[in-house]
Image (tube, rainbow, N blue to C red):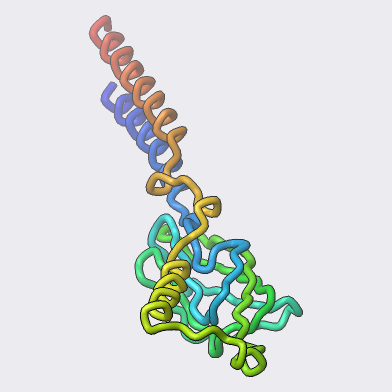
Length: 194
């Protein structure tokens, strides 16, 4: 009889472990710049934030609207954040970012998104005479605004993830626990009757 109870408990534990491992993959939580964003400053750093930590070997590439790959310097990974810096700031145009990351559970997750740059850097020489004069305080404020917009992520791009697990997993797990308890009570009663 003890062998049957041991088998039942082993099966229940196996059922619990498999769904939890399945939902442990890293999901993209946000990027800077975000998907569809129009960046109004000279951009050279791209940042990703994921729902769980990611492993070394995760990477991304940036291509322009003509499909030419933009050189990205060494990619840095710190927990659930990955960032990389382009060799030169991006010129005005459309860009696509393709990423491939390795989750904590060694599952490979990939995806892509796009953004635009309208920095005005190419026409700087032509517009220098027409550029407005800023007082020191105004210039500092506009730099702070640019930095603040660089650190924001698009809330519509974020996905609602609770540590990689959805509420459905908890409901299913609860049902299995109840079924397991019921099974154990049934086995114990059968043993008592025998």
